[in-house]
Image (cartoon, rainbow, N blue to C red; front, top):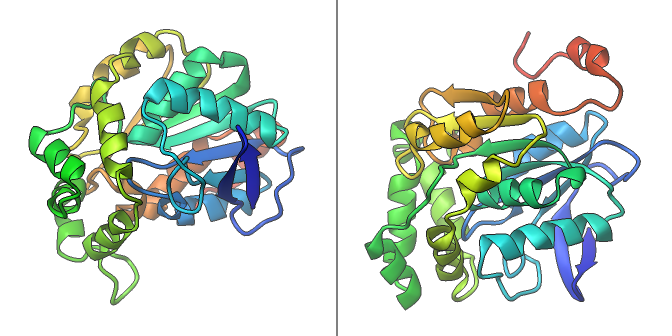
Length: 280
């Protein structure tokens, strides 16, 4: 699916179901240097259970027109313009890492447009290691190598893929290698510069879920505590044996947690009656 935002083409997948703006909507936002494919399992499940799903390539990523936007606030504003272009009054936002910062900033800036917020692999501050920043700016492959080495928990670094014959870290490396020139450096600089997460969290009023990886070395769960405490009644789930890339390391657990949280097409009673994946 293609959507025009600010005169540029945005590519989005809809989870294998036709997009219907009349249904409760869920927008999935990926992290730095990545694209929509990281959400493959979660987006398909949600789309096949009466939700309107948009899993986008952010500007300059994947199959979306560039350039990549250089700051979290600009990306948050872009999210609201995307909702306008898609004909959505409101949507639940699900964001990972940089995408989580963007979702949080959008919910704070435009609360009427955000029905719920799920934040994965996020911290109150997400500074980027100087070696990683330098490698990304230089176009050095070491940048991708560092992200992959830090981004997965122990199982993910030695295989970890539920499907036989596939390798999580190898797949992550190919994903990062597909990013356009300068995109990863721009994303990392945006994360490093953003210091408004705690202020944004204090303005969030919608239901919020934090999904955090127990083995996350890029955004350790303790670093999210200030955000969790700033949002009234926010839920926090720490996933065992998961690193920063939890949605591919523990796909069923992430999908189940999101399904229990996301707003239903009808009411809370109907949501409770629908069994989450893996529940038996």
